[in-house]
Image 1 (tube, rainbow, N blue to C red):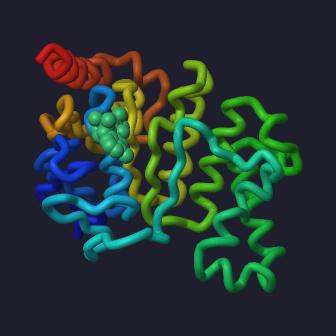
Image 2 (cartoon, protein in one colour):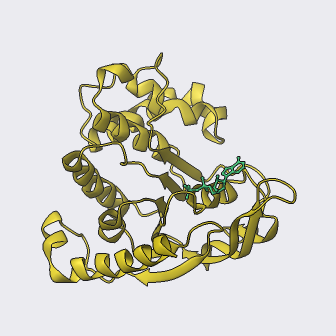
Length: 259
Ligand code: ADP
């Protein structure tokens, strides 16, 4: 069964306003890694808002886990380009934040605090942040902040992880390190991912399927399965197969930018 399904979805932000997205249909299988690429303003973030229930479609339907989305969803974790860590909380306290909000963790947090803290520490260790648990966000590098932000998005074991340009502000080396880390986390304990990105190499490296969107109003103009074997390595990004997939996406984006 599809875990996320867009059925002919259109959205205008204001009554009588222009369409932001137009007739989008996307099916995402459980534990599939999907990337959405397209020019700025094509509606990639709008797709995120529709899945998380922050917006309702003007037309069409959005389903999550077989149910029509109608309000905020708790089985989702999210991370953005800015890490959005709370500056007055330590790394560990930031990572544990969703447990104070999302059920069933919220009700059992006081009783199970030690166990949940152990899980948060283990996740921080998994992403290489041992020794930084008690530091504040301003004491971390940009890459470390994004690692912590991914931990915060995953601490409540969401079935869907939504990532909006999560590595966009990082230098190329850190970005590629975090591609590998995200792939490892996903292979260890699979969850469904929707990644919005401008970076075509990032999309090909991480995704099972890449959707290319047109300029506003955003439509899906290409669905491209990525058949490269896993786990993918940075060396694989220099192969012909990898370059050829990136090239197919680049051609489509080039076409929509000129149109
Ligand atoms: P992307 O993430 O691909 O850059 P968005 O989903 O943010 O694109 O935006 C799609 C279109 O909808 C853009 O033209 C943008 O200006 C418009 N838009 C986004 N949010 C709002 C809003 N809150 N009110 C009005 N228009 C919006």
